[in-house]
Length: 40
Image (tube, rainbow, N blue to C red; front, side, top):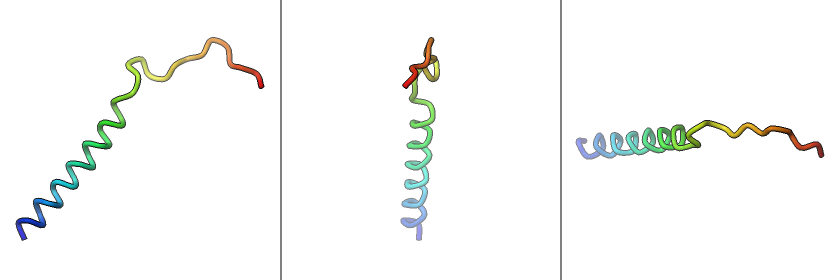
């Protein structure tokens, strides 16, 4: 039973770590702002 709880805790921490990394690993200034949008 303890092993199942430890595995579930490890999977949860891995999930939280992946979500945290994808949320906060972008550009420092946020999204790039273009001066003039291209007309296509």
